Length: 469
Image (tube, rainbow, N blue to C red; front, side, top):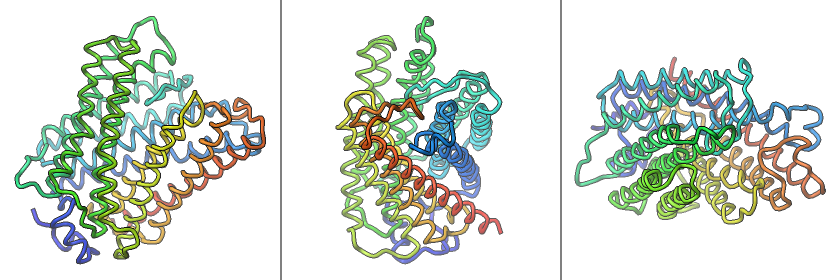
């Protein structure tokens, strides 16, 4: 399948070579692009809702400001929906985009149904803080509100995700040899469907076997532990695909053979196969069950990332100029690499239940998010929209990255003084000047990151409007 010149209005000679030989997918069928546009809109709306709630979160934890806006009572409610929209729904939407563009046109009604059902679930989850009365439960991976509106929204989102994964398997592309960069990307994204299916199975398995005597946080912690670990393998596969794709879109020749890249994708997903073993060997509430899942995630989530990151950096050769249209992509790629490494390094410093923990996973999750933001910029013209404005698009990635680095750094500094996680307002018990300064940096960084995220949304919406004309 060739790439039509008119579908890439600003493609330069270097980028055209990358399309032909690099890690980049050619244009998809018009029906698949339309489906991908629907998933893009769902992801954007989720980010907008998450951004509004993140403002409340930052204000409620920033020393001095928090006394002017006593939002501590709403902090945990906002945190639940913020996390689920900015991580769960956003990443599922990206999966909808990537699996649509990398697959075939088979089972299109199933793909449309997956989008509609997921959108309904997202709407209920977003509305639940305002129309429901459920209390927040700060479980790992998927925090919840114990409210029928939110829980039904989550269940419906899960049903939409199940349809998405099912359609992904049905429409999976055939692997052809010799393998090229595009084939490696398609195969790698198809491999990402395996941990997705395992995650859905793990959620159902936990629901059926979790002791009925448990309630509250203990219940939801066990319910989402296995499936939540499986989700991390999917996000890792997305990030690897985005890194390789963005590097090629910047005109770089990544020094990694397609078959080696496919091996990295396999390593990023094969660890998920350990998860069913943990369910077969031990009950879901056993310590051995939890420890095996943690080991599997560290194995699959760590081994493939470093080789891909080194190959991407070597291909870009820092300091080498790129074409103007590729600058937003390079900004997102560099920012993603740095933030993910920052979060990974913090992971080795965790001791106790303090804010070093959110500093660690914020770095890793933000690293994934930045790579996907850059990929969205690249895909906009290929989905029939306008080119993103270069300067604002470049600024958005750097601004978001700098803000998140400040946010994460403030959390890490505060964690060294024992400031507890998942608390706000007076509950933080900030005793020393150092703790107050650290959390102040966290708050300022959060506001800077919000600006970067807002600029991203504005740039994408403007590009959509230009394309719509």
